[in-house]
Each structure stands twice: as C-alpha cells, then as structure tokens.
Length: 262
Ligand SMILES: Nc1ncnc2c1ncn2[C@@H]1O[C@H](COP(=O)(O)OP(=O)(O)OP(=O)(O)O)[C@@H](O)[C@H]1O
Ligand SMILES: [Mg+2]
Image 1 (cartoon, helix red, strand yellow):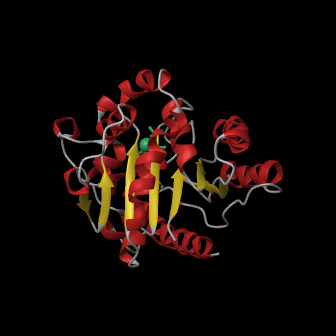
Image 2 (cartoon, helix red, strand yellow):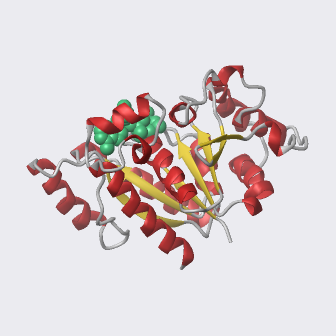
C-alpha cells in the first residue's frame, strides 16, 4: 500500500516546500521508500534537496508530463529520478511554467500527473507532492493525483482566511475528479508561541475549520535555523536535530505514518 500526500496551499510562503523536504527525509530515515515530486516551477523543493541547475537536467517533471500528453511511453525511471538523503526525487525546473498552457488543450487535463504516479507508485510507500502557490491547472493535477492533502498555514489572518478557497476547491474536486481525496489536516507553521497573534489564530482555525478538518496539535515553530538549513540544502533534522522545528517535524511525521496505516 502506498500513500500519496500533497502539501498544498495557494498562499505563498507558508512552508509547503520546507514541510515536504522534511517529512520526506524523516520518512526515508524511518525506512520507508519515499518519492518526492516537485510540482512547482519555482523548483524550491528541488533546490532544498541540493539538486543544482535543474534547467540543465534532461528530464524533469515537465518532460514527463509532456510525454504523457503526447501519448509517449515514459523513459526508464533511472533516467529521471535523482536520489538525495535517501529520498527519490522527480525534480522541477522553470520549464514547468509552460505546462499550464499545454494542459489547457489536453484531454483529461487534470489527470496527467496521476498517470505518471500510477506508473511508479508500486515502488514507494509514500509519495510527497510539493505544489505551487496557485490553484491553476498544475495544482489541480496535484490534487487529482493525491490520496490526501496536508495544508500548511502560517498564523496570520490572511493565511487562515485564504484556506476557505482552497477547501472549496478541494470539495469541488472531490465531487468531480478525485472522490477518494481526504484531508490529512491543517498544519500551523512558522508558529511563534510567544505572540498573541499565533495563539489567537489557533483558536480561529479551530473554530472555523476544526469541526470538519483535523488541525494538527503539533505546530512547526518559527526558527532561523530552518531557513539556514534550506539555504544549505539540508533538512532541519540533519542540520540541527535538537532544534524545536526538527523535533516538531519528527512528531508530525509519526502522526502521518500512523494515519497512513489506518
Ligand atoms: N519553521 C520555519 N521557521 C522559519 N523560517 C521558515 C520556516 N519554514 C520555512 N521557512 C522559510 O520561509 C520561506 C518560505 O518557506 P517555503 O519555501 O517552504 O514556503 P512555500 O509555501 O513552499 O513557498 P511558495 O509558496 O513560494 O512555494 C523560506 O525562506 C523558508 O526557509
Ligand atoms: Mg514552495
């Protein structure tokens, strides 16, 4: 059994890529077979894993999606998967920004990514999808291909407010495109327990969404070390295992493993 978890939010800078980087790494350390797919043309996840100059790579997610759209067979797995820290990665590059236009005129345009994943999911226990801060066709492909969605939100009013549109989009998609999709939960990131704003936002999230969607008890603290780890293309669990954010990501990942086995 494998599980495909998308980390999504159309709000920018809420820690989607950082969360993917860290949960993928921890899952691999726990002995799971993990694939991380960078579905954002900013290629932050690719970068976080230390894959340099992705625009020079022969095969990235863009090429695989174009192959599916052109009804070509996918190339052998070894030609496009890059391994880093025990995680298999399908990298992205700026070229992926051209995919939206190609998708518009494609039949079954929401299912292109899903076709790729179906071909390889048997090789993995967990597949983690990082998505762009938009609700464009590429993100719809991500939401159509996943089993569950993990939604990071920072404790700011706008970040929480914007969840509404994302949740509506997911519910619409559930009716028409991916009936099996579930919510992994809302994860508060860049959390600063010393501020009232952070505390008030937990109450707001619980009040507005808590009845329908799980809000993770564990929150990812704000820490400059997380930014430093990203800059050095390291996970926070390797960069500073005793850091609060590293410990929080460990706890979160344990919960994801438990959810995955239910
Ligand atoms: N827990 C944290 N504490 C401090 N800084 C963080 C934390 N998590 C992420 N950051 C920093 O915040 C910035 C945004 O993080 P990240 O790129 O993971 O967000 P994102 O949601 O993927 O952004 P985008 O929407 O652009 O894809 C980065 O500079 C990252 O290093
Ligand atoms: Mg990102």
